[in-house]
Length: 362
Image 1 (cartoon, rainbow, N blue to C red):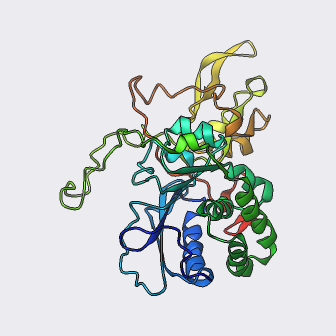
Image 2: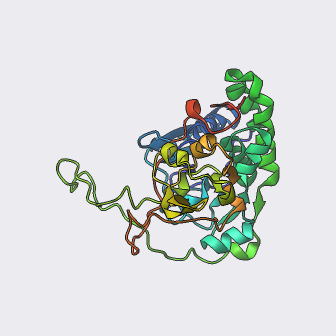
């Protein structure tokens, strides 16, 4: 392998990668694989580590990777602040967290989104660096793979110097050894990610990134309230859980609803809004709709509905969600929602009809 394979490095001689994701999409494993890729396949000194909190699905996750030439020691293990490659595994993080901080004209940005690269650049104000977009979630569903494998292929393409065959071999050596029955599905995910990542037009990559207001975390170890006091009253109620959903929503078909209330009983977060109404000529509490601000996409309601009045649907197909009724009993009209929160989806209590493991879909 060419010792001068790195196209650019920072002032310390390092090529740096940052992955921004939510728990459940596999960014931690993807970061580990990129670390191994640099050391084993690219003959580089390599370092990788991750940052995450409660290890819940839907919680923010970051992964950091540093590469440098063999003759140069790696002596920095702090988070990557100015990445040469930035991979955004969930577009809902943009605007919620400062995930675009530190990008420059040298940054290759890979975004998981159903939008085209040019449309995403305009929607999210990404006007610096090189933007590559692909619908990694849909590709993973098609291939019965995982989002991280699709994003791994896209990262290789955006880099301009990572040979795709080295990524495929790494996939065989890691995922293939643990889940041999899933290796072909994951290899297909890597290949499709490499093939379908599309770059935005050159005009989008020239202007500086617009300055926006980011919420800063003002509490640190020096000035945090004693006793772990939560300084943001009502932070749970005001959470918008939409960024923690993994592509699915429950779709309400009102004509089929018998107002039995099983969906409300199964829902962990008071999503369903029942109010006084008329059903079959009698006064009763009827289903008025869903509070999608608090819906995690677990789809337990779909599983328990006896009349199929709730169906599993792809969220991207419904940008304007029908029967969207915010919970007015909990929230004032002036509430400012925060796009944060963890997803309650777990493998042992899955809404899906297929079995999932770390390596993909069985």
